[in-house]
Image 1 (spheres, rainbow, N blue to C red):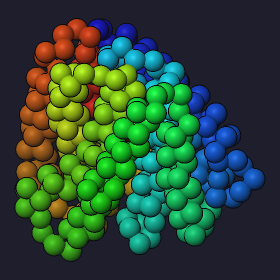
Image 2 (image 1 turned 90 degrees about the horizontal axis):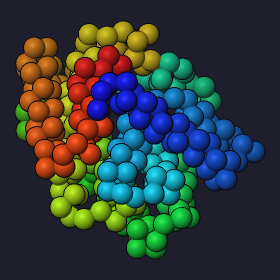
Image 3 (image 1 turned 135 degrees about the vertical axis):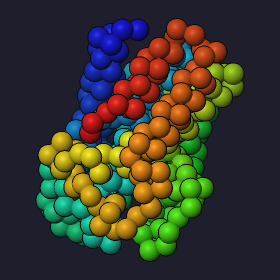
Image 4 (image 1 turned 90 degrees about the vertical axis):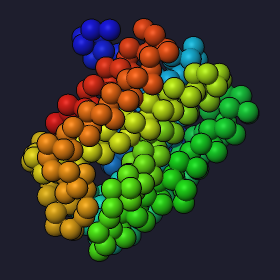
Length: 295
């Protein structure tokens, strides 16, 4: 797949996700409530939609119905957005900007942002419950989303993140932190796509390995950009890791070492896709683009 074909496919996945998110917001997050307006402000405010794209790409690779899988993609984006709203709160990372705009608690209020994030969690599971897929698939999807987001997944990663603001972390502890905080929902992306398509175990295994590796790539590049980029480019504050005295891949390995580590995990992600042949070319391009992203 050449780069132009990749960009066209990426844009198609994003368009499908955005269209479905708007439709589902009208159904489950009506604008009469301020918490719904705040949730929509954060959810529909842009973003890379990497997790949703993984749902759709995995589903398509497995021969599934993209229009049905779009509900799973939207649910994952809702849950991811809730985590971002909470991350930005004063009791967490205390960030004033997200995606180039004031954070939800700055645009509205801290209490409204808290409730808006909670509304996104419940909406995500309502979306899955009402998706036009089999009952078995919907049960699998609910379990995947709960596991990826909960105390064995993203939330545990957030707990570790707060803990290591005040305690120096080892290499293994930083890897564990980010496999949970960032990696768990990226892994959930391919798992949801497989659940939507009823994919075989032989397909699930390489996709899950791929997702675990690009989850680490995503976080390592985030750590690098927090040092090398600007608020204008990223759309969120930079330098916050240093301000909070966090142990990152950059503090552990330096910039060059972190970049090399990102490449190693990217190579592992590509190797996992080898058995899938040309039909996994979009995911190969995605991995390469995540490795060199600048925002």
